[in-house]
Image (cartoon, rainbow, N blue to C red; front, side):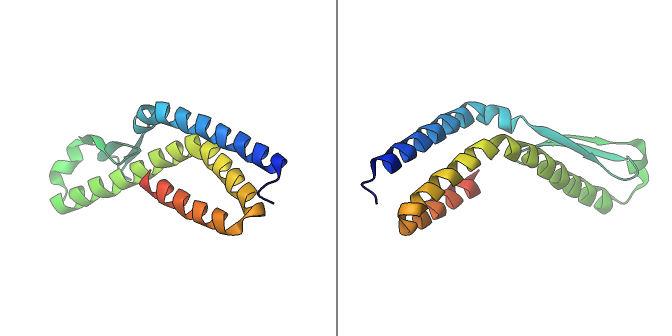
Length: 132
């Protein structure tokens, strides 16, 4: 089955498409890191801005925070930063969906001919995905 020329051609096309999308991703990495989101406390006294990689970019504390418990303000900053980061990361993940879809097609095609190779490739891509 691995000697099937149509399979080899199909997988070469999908691999080429994946390489193009990965190159596009590399070019977009700065853009992805620049994806930001904001979050604010329910009372509006704490406002944060964070990016998709978890960097806290801005904190705004309203006048009401001078009378609030410092521990509460600190926890609010941490929780809001996590919330903003999750939102920004979701936006970044949406940009990467085309790469993931192509990876899935490549793995599925390989799996039709060699489940063991597809399993190994799936594990490698999971490691790659966790590193993003």
